[in-house]
Structure formats: structure tokens, C-alpha cells
Length: 266
Image 1 (cartoon, rainbow, N blue to C red):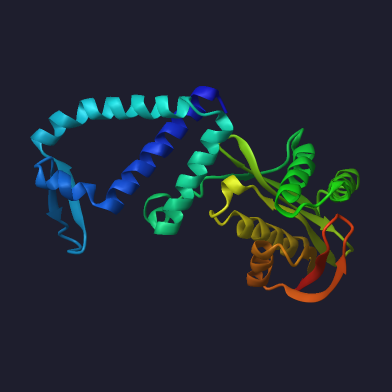
Image 2: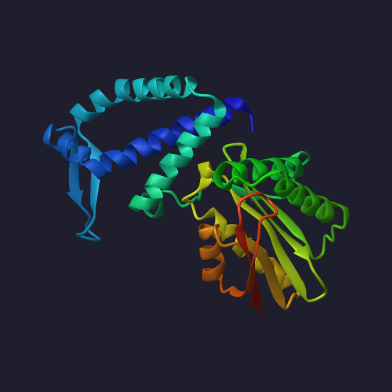
């Protein structure tokens, strides 16, 4: 994505959040009292009102519009691209939690796509970074991730396997793999949602993509391996219909953990 276009999109996202927040705190009511906007009850639905600028409001709007565009660009310009992405993700999460996304933002703020060169290396690195940071998992865990990715790439079956990369504002923020275990069993692997993209329903969406593809590919069961400390992921799996089949303790990666095996049969 060209840098100029991406910068303009981020400015628009910040300003969209500003409009959402002004509605939340009642700024529009102040504008109405000052004679800048006019409210008219909808003829079709009395619960709704249409807002228009008065002549006084139009005169005040033009310079404010230019200044808002400039000030937002200047604010974002002080942040590195990754920090800008985190800011936009946080604003998206606030709108989602307060109900704004359902009313004003039909798009989830991210895209899902097939992997590109470099993405598989990112998957291994980001898994290792986040789990070391959050759970103090050591280097052997990174080795497990690298082996999973290597097996997927070297044995890839385009008819029955998939990898999805989630991207937001030009930056990778999530991933998931669906790998073939056998002719009838598929396995979900390496579900990851970066902190900057949490709160958007991305984890559930990635799992749903796997399950839909598994059905189309003719699998009769989807299985996965996770750990009891990963409560958010476990909630997603349980909500999708997976059942916990067995668990066991290990300390292969440093701190003792409980690994779990979950299955979903069609």
C-alpha cells in the first residue's frame, strides 16, 4: 500500500473515531445549543433525527475542517508507523466495545489474505516474541513453531490446507494454519492475534475461516493442541464447538504448563 494512501487512511480513521467520541460525550448537543446544527425528526422513524448545518455552522465548518485534517496529520507524524497502527487498533477496539462499530463501521479494520514471501518467518518470530513476553516460554517453543511452519511449507497440499495472514494498516497482526493430519482429520495450528489487533473478533474470525474450509475440503474432524493458560483462545475454541478431550502437564519450554487436545467432529 503506498505510504501516502496509508497515511490518509490513518488520518481518516482517527477523525472517524473523533466523530464517534463526540457523539458519546454529547458534543453535538452543545453545537445545537450554539445554533451551529439543526435537528429534524425523521418522517419515517420518529426515533431518528437528521442533523444539518445552519448558515452559521457552514461558515464555521470550513476552517475547522482544514485545521482538523492538518492537526490529525501532525499528531500521527510524531508516531512511528507501528505506533500509528497500535493507536488505530485501540480506537477500533473502543468503538467496538461501546457499540460504535456496529453502527458506523461495517468493516472490521483488517483483511485476511494468503501468505506472501517473508510471512512464514514473521509467524515464527512473532509467536516466539509474544509467548516469551507473556508466558516466559523459552527457545524450544520457537523451535516447535519453526518446525510446524517448515512441515506446512514443505508438505503443502493446496487442495486441503490453508494459511491465513491478518493484515491491518499494512502490518501483519494475526495468523492461523489449517494442516492435514489425515484424509479425514485437519489440525488448526499457530493461531495468533497481535495485541494491537485484539478486541476486534479477529481470533474467532480466523478459527471460523479454518472450519469453513475444513467442511468444504471434506474433513470429518478438526483437532488442535493448546494450553490451559491461553484463556482467550480456549474460549474461542469452546464457542466454536470444540470439546476438550485430554490434557497433560509438561515443562518443555520453561515454566510448567498444561497442554490440551480439543476436537470438533462434523
